[in-house]
Image (spheres, rainbow, N blue to C red):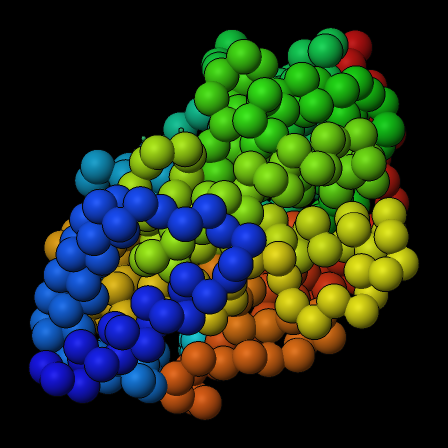
Length: 406
Ligand SMILES: CC(C)=CCC/C(C)=C/CC/C(C)=C/COP(=O)(O)OP(=O)(O)O
Ligand SMILES: [Zn+2]
């Protein structure tokens, strides 16, 4: 354990070197140090992670993910209405790990997702269920990740656009399903699929930008709907949706920036989702993934940002949190030590790790083993960069349906 204790000291020194950070009182510092030291210590013992050069357990994660894929048809009863999500989380994680699937398996997944597609357009959480924006986003992301002709052509774009119109409200917000709840996930999911498969029209998203802005809170982040609490999941949706509309400049960037940089936990290195809550591995992406979007906005606003060398968060600290605290030794990743592994956290911790490892033009800064490097993601859609560019190129050639509600 001596080596671990020394490394912990080194980590502590690194985290507190920023002189602009307010210095915690010695009592506060002692409390945090004690609990984090216990956390790092406990987890490094369980997982046998070398704190000086943490290794990504690639093979373990790939095996866990591939096994999860074979359970899909009959397991996960509690996620029976989230089956396209299961496909997306697994496929995207495998893509990040540079793992490939057999051609016949790819085709089987495409056929399954085809069964989740509804005659009235959009995708449901499972075959024979009602269409919903969340599984629609997941299914389209999964199909674009697979990226075969069969996968692209199974998407009924005309009907998908019809479904998007059916959940749009006049104020520019989107219901998650006909008659369902309105929140900022809706407008992000609608925009992401519309842009990816080239069915976006200005009319479909009329007023959406101002509705999204009405969700920016006094803290600076975005909430699910106007007047609610800012949260990382919703903040990503808000910023990514504005970016898909090309209207990022409408957001109060200064307050957004202040809010989000303060969500990285000084000690653990991971992110919390909202003020005064706990660190959680999935926010590695929901919060961490917003930084490449922010970088693009800052570059548009101020040419000086071009000279920046990194995202505006502590990339190494986030990599350490994911590698040291979030890996289950049998494969799969977790929210925080002591929590069980699951494919949602596997997907979003790995997505966040990829963001933390790379800067613009793929410039890599890899913590630990060189072999830890993951594939690049497209930060707006959160699918592989190559998969996103291929899909955009494929659908760009197709005619944009011009349906309007009757
Ligand atoms: C595209 C899409 C569907 C995006 C989903 C975004 C997302 C993750 C939203 C989170 C919503 C939320 C309020 C969680 C709080 O959970 P909690 O109270 O258990 O967690 P906390 O203590 O960390 O806030
Ligand atoms: Zn989580």
